[in-house]
Image (cartoon, rainbow, N blue to C red):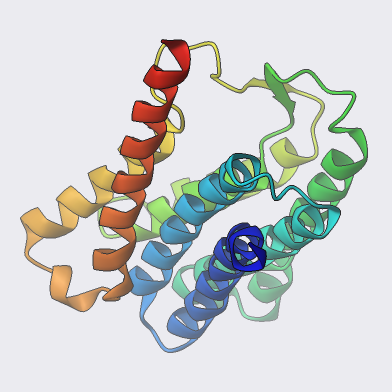
Length: 229
């Protein structure tokens, strides 16, 4: 029973470790690896909360751990990734600007943590840090066809959108599978990798995470149909 209760926290720690590995890959020039690890972190982040509810393992510790993992994987890791791929050419100024992303992200997470109980479940106030970090990872993954100026503009825009008061639809009322957007983005990236024949250059973790995540979605779909019956 104790092991079952610990599963959601283990998934959250896996998300955090993906962020750590992403920073390491980015520092050593493995930019595509770093971007893929952030996307894998998105998958794990989408799973831990639902697993906690499924296993009746919700806890204050889990919620705080989730925020700490998010700031590393979707705040610090994407900022290092953007710095090493684009902003390094501006020297110290580029380093300072890259550091703004996790600062805005941390503020956004803190604001969410103290207001989530009062906020409608149909929208987010400001862009979630998970989405912002994932967008930067995707822009870097396709950096060979996306102009650097676009990444710079998106980077700047995401910083301010995270702390804005703009209401972002949560898409929960859209008739799509849960987390369909995340799945579509991730599988689209995987398809691109396979088509380009470069899958051997990416972390082997991707071959473990993808089938596990698909199995998790299938389980959620079957369980949802049974609950309706």
